[in-house]
Length: 304
Image (cartoon, rainbow, N blue to C red; front, side, top):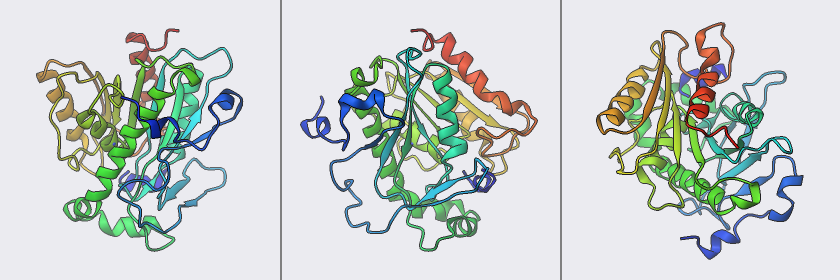
């Protein structure tokens, strides 16, 4: 999605009842949608605007905006192909939009081919007051400090959505034929913020990811950046020519993990820019997800 190159983180009773879905027929339904909260999401009860989309025919550049109701969309591997690993995918978009195909659905479909059960996360976003969220965002990208201030409350909500997503997948692991000890989260740019937000803010075994993959993440929006004692292994990827100047967010995170004696792998490409996702540019970044697959294999998460 070229537009995202502007900028593109104890089981309760209520949780067991939350989704407006029938667990018994999950495996027979294509891409079931799971509502993460029973009713209005906490903190955004007064949001009354409606989610909207901008679709581009024949393109992977579709975007969503004005997300009010956080959901997961499940992408299931072909029958008999599941290896028991699950990954939650958080698309990016500066907490104003979601690059839902390039950094969401297309990633999920690739993971399905590897036997991984994928869940695309729609987390809450800043309210766009027009039907042209990209134009609104373009004006705000000139001052990251102001953008962070505007995004602040939504970032904390989005992280809660990420934690809730991990908890849901682990709670219902048996229904999806998932190993509850093989649940990861990955995200792009702002989705990388959500990804690392879940790592830094996980409070128990139910919402703690087993591994994480922040891709060209933006980390400055995170207030808590303390490496947890049980920090999961990280796969980190970005491009040195990131036009938003975010390359060091990835390299610094790698150094932080290594200095804390935690596992991390870093791929820093010479070219690729920001927001390359699943786009093909005729550059080595076109194969970044193959490197991710190799890392998953090395860790044993592609084995049945």
